[in-house]
Every structure is written in C-alpha cells, then in structure tokens.
Amino acid sequence: MTLPTPTLHTARLRLRPFADADANALYPLHSSTQVMRFWDSPPWTEQARAEQFIARCRKLADEGTGARVAIDRASDGAFVGWCALTRWDPDFRSASLGYCLDDATWGQGYATEAAHALLRWAFDTLDLNRVQAETDTRNVASARVLEKVGFVREGTLREECIVNGEVSDTWVFGLLRREWRP
Image (cartoon, rainbow, N blue to C red; front, side, top):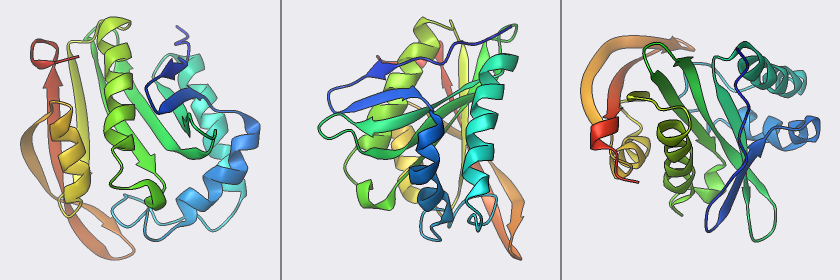
C-alpha cells in the first residue's frame, strides 16, 4: 500500500516531498554536530548519505510505512529541515513523529508549526488514533515542541542509546486522537 507524501502549507512554511536537489541542503543539516547532538546516530561524513536518505524517503512512501517531508520557509523558499511520520500502521491506526531542523531556525517556532501541520494530516487524512514520538532526555527543546502540540510524556527508556560511546536515556511521548487540538 503506497502512502502519498503530502504537500502542506502553514502561515510560514511549506512541507513537501523531497526532491533529489535537496541533498545539497540536507547534507549540511545532518553533518552538523550541533544538530545531531541528541540523535541516535553520529553526524554524516559523506555527501552520499543525503542521497540515500532521500531514496529512503521515497521507499517509506512506496512501502506505505510513512511519509517524510522537506520543510521550506514560505517567505524565501529556504530549506530549514524535515518532518516525518514513520512506522505507520493502518490497522492499529498509529505512527511515529520525528523532525530535524537547522539550528539557525531553532527557537522560532518552525518545529512546532511543522509538527502541527503533519499531525493535522495524520489525524484527518490517515485517521490515526495515536502518534508516538521519542526524544533524548537532554533535548529539552524538543520535548517542549512535543508538549506544545499536545503530546504527553509517557515514560523513560533508560540507557536506550549509545552513540560514540555516550549513553543516553529517551523520553517516550504519546498523543491520542481524543487529546488532539487542531
């Protein structure tokens, strides 16, 4: 079952399917030690990783397991990051939310705005009942984004990740349809 990747618009952003040309903007994002500090994998060191990422975006949609969209600023068309719904399960009516934004845009509300737009699509179009998200416990800003769009922290996965020898815990958040406030 294919899942069409949406194009969504907000007041300040456009969320759209990835294009091959996005590799040039995607590589600096994922090779930044600042941006990748709390991820479960180290920063990229090869440009080819960006092309592989875009190919995996298409595969997600083709396999019907998710949708990952590029985020552009509406005012100038600049690529600022991406947002995704993965692990989509139409039987359980559930999926997982993730996002990654350029550190130059942090604190401007873009992650909250993009997450809100993708959640609206998830609940309205995919008829989801539950969306889950996870973040490193040290990433308080990401936890705040999730709480702003309605997620509830449900638990902690202790010592869940080890990246470059650094052990970290993960918070698990959940958002139910009945709690969703569009």
